[in-house]
Picture (cartoon, rainbow, N blue to C red):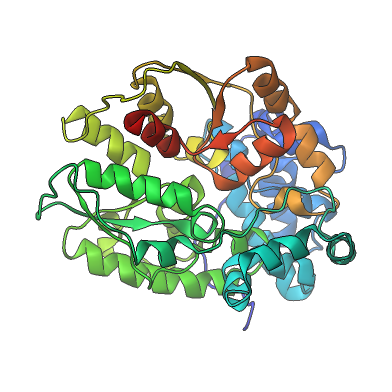
Length: 410
C-alpha cells in the first residue's frame, strides 16, 4: 500500500511565539539529550521544511504524547507538525519493518488468530524469539502484552446481557473497544459492557470498525491510517444518522477520532462531522451516575486504595478525569491521582530498543509514586499505560471500569 501522505490542513509555524513552555513540559526532552524538543523540531524547524531542506535528525525521538499541545498557551498543534513531518520523511526513507509491526498490531493479531494464545505467548517469552525481536529493533526488556485466549469481540458474540437492570429498548450505545482491549484485555471490554448494561443500555459492538490508526500515524504509515479513518468515519456517520452515541474506553482512540482525523485528514470531514464525535466512555458513565441511570452501590465492604494515573492522551482532550471521579464516588474506595507525569511507553514508543531506556526514565517518577503508595491497585484508562505501570512498579494495574465492577459485584 502506498505511504504517500494525503493532503492535510495548512499549519502555520508563525503561530508559535517561542515561549519554550512546550520544551519544559516535554517528558522526552527532559529524559534524553538526543531530542531537541517539540518547539525546535516542530514549528521552528517547519520553516526549514517549507524551504525544502533536510529533516531534523532527532524527529524520530518525538513520542507523540501530546504534552506539548497540552502545555502550549496559544494552542499551536505542535505534535501535528511532528507527525506530518514524520509522514513526509517516511515517503523518502522507508520505515524499518519493526515500525510496521508496531504500527499494525491489528493486522498482526489477525494473521495469528488461528494460533492458540498459549503458543503465541510462550513463543513471545522464548529467549530465541526475544533475540530475533531485538534484531528487528524491539527491546528485549520491553513488557510485551500477552494475547488473550479469545478476543473481546469473539467473547462478546457469546455474551449474555446483564439482566439485573432492565434494558430500556430506547437506550442504545455503540462500544468501540480499540485494538488493545480486543486483542489483549477483553476483561476490560466485558466490564465496560456490564456497566453500560447496568445503566440500562443495549450495547452494540460492530465488527466493521478497524484500528483507529493512531499507531500507524505515530510510526509513519500515514496512508494506512487514512484508509482506516475513511472506513471508520463512514461507520460513525451511519450511527450518527440514527442518533446513537459511540463510546470508547481508550483515550488514544477517542483523541484520534475527535482531534487527529479532522487535523490530518480533512478530506474525510463533512459538515456533519460535529455529529461524529466518539465520546469517552468514562464521561458517558459519569453522566449516567449523575442522572441516576447508574447506581454505584457497593456489594463489597472491603476498603480499597487505588492510585490513578491520567493518560497523556486523555489530558490532551481537556475533559477532566471522569475515570477518577467514578472511582472516588465508590463507597469504601480511596482513589488518589498520582500526579506523576507520563508513564513513558506512549503507545508503541517504549517497545523500541533505542527508546525503551528513555521510556523507563520518563516513567520513573510514576513508578516510584506507585510503589510508595502501598495501594491495592493502580488504575488507568490506557492499555499500554497499564502495561508499563505493571512493568515499572510491579503493581496490579486495571482499567477503572474493572475496579468499579469488582466493587459493585463484591
